[in-house]
Image (tube, rainbow, N blue to C red):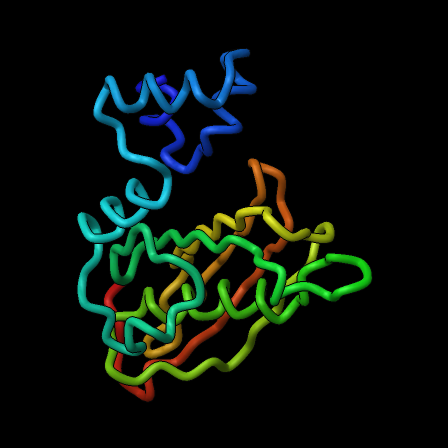
Length: 177
């Protein structure tokens, strides 16, 4: 179990139980014996361990839990889809939540006090439902003076649900990439 969580710290107790063909209670007991915290605490620990100051956004402006940030290089965030984020009838997440996670992650990557979005192009790959966890990975792919191109890929259980490209500007200041 420790190796599985080292590879993917976002696995839930239910997913671990299914993977190892044991009960959820067995997973919880094993986690306790191995002194492995539950999912929410693992997420908090990971975020506080890796978090650095985010210049263009305040901490409350990032959509999702920021798990990793290397300014000018890459970032990672996790967002769990809750019932208030979906359409009541279909239980499908509203697209603007997925976009907001990707967009805020792209902006957080830029090491500048001011960041403006020039172009944001996204493609939704499949519907997302209540309870699913969105893992967004952002990466700077090109720096063109004060313009930066950021690629964001969002997955649910390694299945693509959104791909996006954002061209952002640092308000005239060059960015080293």
